[in-house]
Every structure is written in structure tokens, then in C-alpha cells.
Length: 279
Image (tube, rainbow, N blue to C red):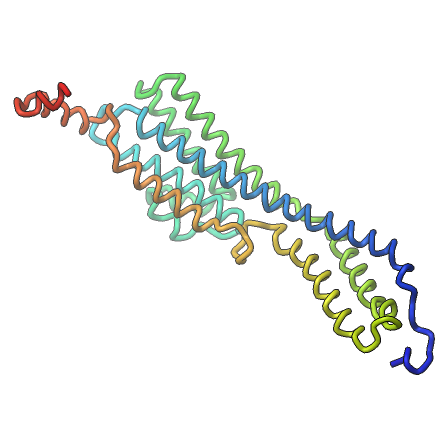
């Protein structure tokens, strides 16, 4: 309106070249930094899933069953691996220990976990305590114990990496300054385009402002990947995947289990099965 009344409000487009470059670099840095945090969180959780699978497999296959209660103890240990992942998820979301953990823990462990400041570390302690007990009972040798403890250390390292992402947000001063620059830049856009676009200036500026503020908002949305928003990591589904993997694993019979040995003995004593065993 001021332009059509002859008031000199138009700015040359070339005058905004340097501000455009500076603002573009700041937006790229903001978005890349946020995406790096998101991707690192995904890699840490992917590593945690693989480590839980490996440690669960070793516990189930390697640890000997010398007594009747050893099978139940192994199942409880595998549940602790899932409990570590669920406790890590709740810890990163700053949620209290809830009923999601209750079926995975013994009642005394569940009550104990409610008063802990870092529940995943307490679960890791119980897992290592179980491994040490099996070593003292000579159910695993020192090399097997070392391999399993190394996997447990990787789980705790993944927890520490996620905590680093959570507790190191983008500096507030940088985020505020970028938003202020975006606002000033978008307010000056009409003065740059009015002489060339005329009445099309308003929709053009609206579209450009929507694009720029949308890019900036994307960085805010993904910089913390551990929440419940649709753009965050699907931690609930990852924990469910680990539960299903552990449940499937417990349906298998390792060759050092008492049940497997009893079945083998039964087959050897049956004349009808000798031919089957020989093949």
C-alpha cells in the first residue's frame, strides 16, 4: 500500500544477499546439529538392542543348569535385560518406575527400583551380580564371564551416551538469537519484493516465512529423540521387540540343559530311536 502511494519503501534485492547467506548457514548448522543428535540416539538404541540379544543368548546357552531352580534364575536374568531397556526408556523420559517394569522384576527388586535415582544402573548391578554368582558356582568359566561382562558394559555405555544427548541441549542463547534473526528477516522480505511482485508479495512472503520457521522448528522437534512425539524414536516398539526376542529365546533348549539331556537319555534307551540317532 505504501509502495503504490509513492512512498519509497522498496529495498534492492541484492542488499539481502549477505544476510541470506548468513541466515542460511545458521539454519543448516541448527538442523544438522539436531539431526546428528537424533541419529546418534538411534545408533545407541540399535546397539543396545543387539547387545541385549547377544548377552541373552550367551546367558541362555553358556550358563550351566546344575539344579532345578537354575532354569528359573536364567529366565529372571533374561527378564532383567529387558528391564534394563525399559528402565532406560523411562529414565530418559524422566518418568517414574511404573507397572511396565513390574512383570519383569521380582517384587523386592520392583520396590527397590522405585526409590533409585538411576534405575537402569541398579538393574545392571543385579545382572552382574547374577553373573558373578554363576561364576562362583562354576557354571561359567572366567573367559565366558569376561565376555558377558563386556556386553553388560556396552549396555551401560549406551545408557551414558543417551544421557549425554539428553543433558546437553542446544544452547538457549543460540536458539533465541536464531529465532530473532528469522523474525527480522521475514519482516524485511516485503520491502525486498514489493517492487517486483506487487500484490503477490503477501502470499510469497507468507510461504517463505512458513518454510524458514518450519526448518527451524524441525531442529527443535528432533533435538531430543527420546520423547513421545511422533517424530521421536519409537522406544516403546524397540522395548517390545526385545521382549519378543527374549520370549522366543526361552522356548529353545540348549544342549547343556537338564531337559535336553533327559530327552537324549530317553532317546538312547528307546530301541526305536537308535536308528534315528545314528543318522
